[in-house]
Image (spheres, rainbow, N blue to C red):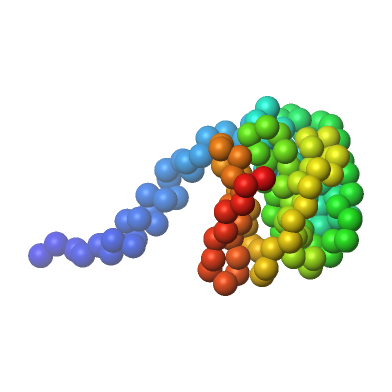
Length: 142
């Protein structure tokens, strides 16, 4: 009669000896404060929202700070997306709005939304997709 080996035991042994998938770390840099969101621009630029200082910071793919700008009237940003033309969209829940900026931080537009947002994405066609905490998605032409 053979010994019974738990499948969980086998998985735990394999997990401890197999390499972690995902590839090698390519870059890393420190940020000044808690990040609210992150998005990648069409040229590989990295955009982050910094909650406590209420701003957007733009980095090169290597981590060099390229630009930053304040986001007015904010308690907390919770989403950021970058459109195919480099436009930056930031969701601001406490004011129930989305603000559109140029890639260098010039405010271009803003519009009100109804509800608490919890995600934003920009499609290749220029449409903006926003998810809400009430399990709804709305699509905007920006």
